[in-house]
Length: 150
Image (cartoon, helix red, strand yellow):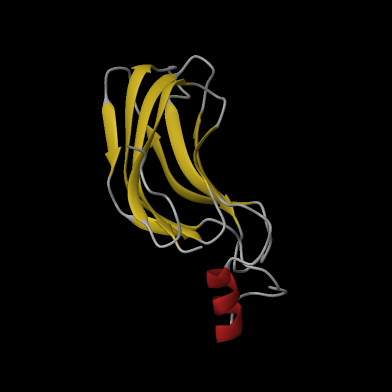
């Protein structure tokens, strides 16, 4: 039986990436009126480059201040991992599937805060994982809750 994903649902999802190197991978592609709560990200280093053996996680989305601009990298972590090690990020955080609309300055009034929550733009936000060297090979799992408020 298929998993119900309609309006008003909340489901646990996961995404898997094998052998990540310097090509960034989207772990979550935002959908309008969804809220994503990341529960954990696990990274295992299969092969790591001597000096650039890092993996980083960030949100590509809207900065509500001071730049109030789209397409900003909001860093979550950058971790150096040697071959054979595993790193687990299990601090929870949430983000919206789409950016807010009609923000012309740094968020400083309730109406702008509501605009962020309303997700009335046409621009998705992403959870992205990246690595420092083409010779790295990281296996990644990401577990998250997808709340559909459409």
